[in-house]
Image 1: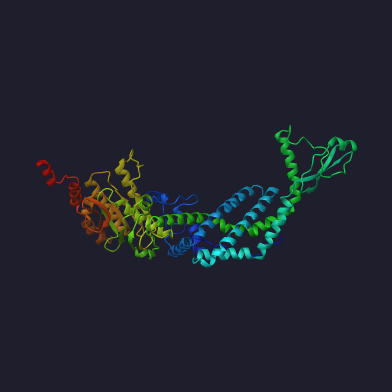
Image 2: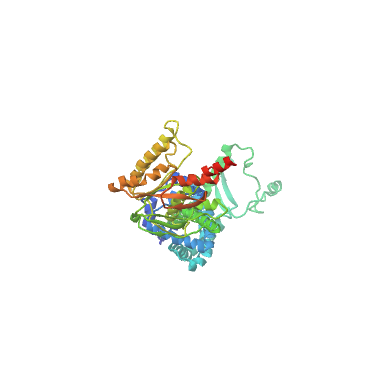
Length: 541
């Protein structure tokens, strides 16, 4: 087969990265963006998507161009449901090609490697035919750069003269190789009928037949049927040791290898110069395909549950914007049968960090996680669960949630909490997002509020965005004094949020106002008949 001369540039074919440079920087870990597994677990991202060949951190980015490129990709996925099914059908082909390469690497100069090469090309052409017949008809509907490039590349590959010739020669090769059923062996004898030389005389496309041996030997009629055996060479595999069987098999394989050696050499050139180049970009896309298809499934489920979805407007990182209208927590949407209470939430010059207080199970943790998940979804290129959203990406999300696995034996729970907080300060930057949920709740309110105020001043001076969800009402009451200390030193402002109570019941609405510690207790006391007025009424009755 003629050597392949023109190799197409497939370095920019990606569903998630707009160009070869952004893909290279991602592959080398040069992006200034990180999403840790701990953060992914604490935000319950794995409940949304169960990824096998990758994780959320693999695709987390703060590159605006990359995010916008992905938004278009997911728009095509949602508008053309057939795309998901096509991508899913690709996976078995790509898995088989990957496995064949592993198997063939140990037998680079054998007939086995030759057969692996043919099988790989069969898989490649089957995959290309699948994409040609299913992806290309959708091309006129596609708006994203990712899928238009992908379709153009498949069209170029499958429409080339080389691809046509490859299919033709593949059929010829498979008919030659796959139809081998037997070999004819020649043996030279000396004058005493001792074998002195043996070799393969022909390769046949039919099995030999056993024949009527006694009759043929008596008549010495060896020309009746050249494919009829007149005597077995050995009682093959019966009564032989493993070593004897292996020696015989090696002898046959060695002879066949000699026959195919030249074919192997020429065929390997085709593999190296064509198939490797034109399948590597598809193999590289495997984690992308898993992520894109499972993310699309997630978006469909959220839409079915009535969860609002919008592509966020991406603002420059340095502006540190986040302004969401009708923000929902997708985890809660997937777990509850009923509607989820939406909330408006924003970071601005009057509140880059919030102290969030309110009743237990009043929505504090829900909104804290909702903000974090919105950042993750936006920076993965997905729509966020809100009516509208403007967001400046963050370089990293730091969570400080109760873990259930605190190192309390050596440090005590408070010591463990402080240790984890201290570790955050070693890595946090002004472009980070901090999410603290009931931190420092393992000690008394006085000690907890004092340490928490020091921590908040520290985050203020870092100039990051953050939420501190807490039962420490003394901490919420001291926000003004914390600002008075931190802002003159260059820190960002801290503000209060409250999980509201309406008529003694949780509304799950988050309000931007100063908390009234007594109001919640008063509403609860009244609801259960424990206000002084109701107690007096009960006493009188």
